[in-house]
Image (tube, rainbow, N blue to C red):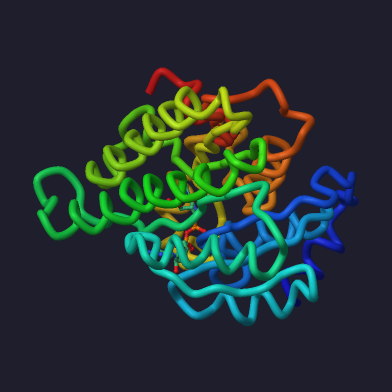
Length: 263
Ligand SMILES: NC(=O)c1ccc[n+]([C@@H]2O[C@H](COP(=O)([O-])OP(=O)(O)OC[C@H]3O[C@@H](n4cnc5c(N)ncnc54)[C@H](O)[C@@H]3O)[C@@H](O)[C@H]2O)c1
């Protein structure tokens, strides 16, 4: 089933939350990545979407979404790619109202297994990628009178779990700081900047998680289940919309209550 069909067939119908908006979304990989489902939800809510990713999968995803979406290939750690992405969005759709920066890479090394290579790879994609995408988004949005930015952080940015890479947690904590920093610096220009912090979510990459780890991570949530990409995307859509017009500088846990626990 194509991802747009999944969203069409979901119990949630369009509320026109993002009617007439143009969004640049990074991390739009294959179907069932959080980015691909976010792109589908944004189209459902009336936005036009530039679907960007490093993998090449953004092409098929954009085709499945129809004429409201166009693909763009980039590496968010390369400033010239990021500048070209925003230029392409303006060329294609006329302007940019929203950035959703979903792109990320997972860390595998825990505790003392951490390596300089993994640290550099994670900080490069999460931290530098967030810095560059946010920088070029505000350059585009400020002269136009404002906009909304949504970064993807993680529940692992607040507290620590032994299953999660320390370099990943540190990089995502940096994403929270960048979110607040851009919110404070650019609020006067009408730009809102917020973050979504997912808990364990059944995106494509987690479908193959071994059963014991699946059970362990699912049980972390007070709701005792994993989240879905759509549950992440729907919160991002609300925060990006004008209904959240007085919300900026916050990191919203979308984690079924994982971070509400003492441990
Ligand atoms: N799935 C979860 O349980 C979970 C939990 C907490 C946070 N998150 C965060 O949510 C976001 C999406 O998660 P997901 O599960 O869909 O991940 P995913 O790995 O399936 O998708 C991430 C996408 O980012 C793209 N990407 C990676 N590096 C890139 C780069 N340099 N430039 C451009 N694109 C790049 C990948 O190609 C991929 O399509 C990530 O930032 C992740 O850290 C996910």
